[in-house]
Length: 360
Length: 259
Image 1 (tube, rainbow over the protein chains, first blue to last red):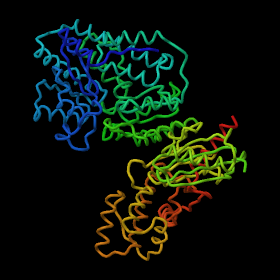
Image 2 (image 1 turned 45 degrees about the vertical axis):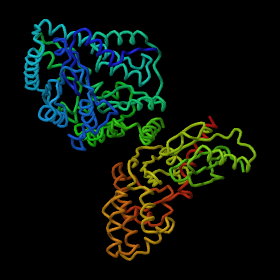
Image 3 (image 1 turned 30 degrees about the horizontal axis):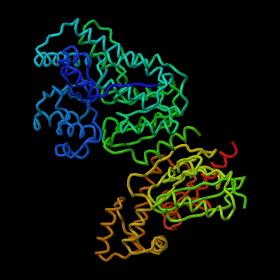
């Protein structure tokens, strides 16, 4: 199927031309609706890959992951100049450190806004995030001079919920929509910068073009993000079929629609009760249960943990997670990458061997 | 000689080719140091074989190893993990934990009772635990790679090389030589350092006995001795340890032919 996804630059220019503000948002969880209620458009910064890391390297330790290194390098080379503000969720120690480096040392022109996330799924975690969103509301009001009402907020929330429902539907029908692994993730990841309404149009079109299920060796891809994206083409070529994912930039953000009439609580609940994620404090047991059910529902035979080197929240869970999966009869493999490097031959051999092992 | 299928293993150090008959027995093989132009080398391999058996028509070729994608004559490319497991299982007739120490990487492959790959680990990011570690150290000690094992085994004592990193190990060697330590104990220490790295990989996947060895490095007798000492397991070797990748590839080519 032919699918045209507008490039990031074009989308940003269009937003700016129409008087919108742009927020550069670092990984992983935040409320798109809250930003949109102030006519601030989120454009996510997952790296980006392949930039001159020496610029960021001057401020960060060598053991900080390439997503954070690249984010800072990209900012220092002027890549975020178009952004009016930078929102940094407190996803991990490295991103929290980046916030401090930016606020205390680099002091870029843009406003730096941290977002503290709770590490649990209890009522007090929801309450904490509600307070965080209320503080953000005040900061965005100060920044824009706007004061969206509860109704405005709920309108923005419902627009995002619609888009997320379509995203979830895409996931459920991923084998029938006729997209290769790489095209599927190009579409899913366009949610990182496309306004919800544009993404929804694309998703609806894709869902209409249903075809026969694609053949392939069914696997789950877990980790932070599928970069370099060549890995997806490589999996396609090796007859691997990603039937489900546990990726931070994708499947872990399949937020369910909220029910609360209070917009702040609704935004908070959507994030707190999202699919398990080590950066939000979900236990290994919860993740194991989630992955096992995902494999059962999707027919996946194995899990590729495709990890960014030095990503502490991810790597810490892996030994126990893999042992648990093995007990359930699910094979797994760890591939560690730096998003700046092109895909090495060794990765091809490991993934190839893993797929051959599952196929045999 | 009736070759029914061929396998080629384009490794980082050597290129190996094996031919099997319809029963899957290896009846022909060839090994050379890898040339910079792999495509040309493979052409010359095949031309040589063609001269011997007149025609290659109808003989499928499966490629494996580091340079497998450069073999355009292959009907299929398969990873060395699968091929080594296939070759060793076919030759020894049972599964186990296979350690393959190659020139540029090392692998631990758990082979199931039916010859299938059950799990594997690869050390492919640095030279620690690979043939390159020994090659580098041998060059520094001015000992030929072929003699390295026997020289090490002649040691009456052994020093500890704490680095598994090839570069740092070289620094340690320089320091020891400067302090007058003899070649033999250093070489023995180097073998143990390499094997400790490999054994750590074996433990990461979990050793399922028996312990099997393949790859060019196992021609070195010190490797076999030290790995037995470190794992407390007897090791088993196929007849042609260096050719197991190519042999496994040939067996897979035979399967393609029989389909």
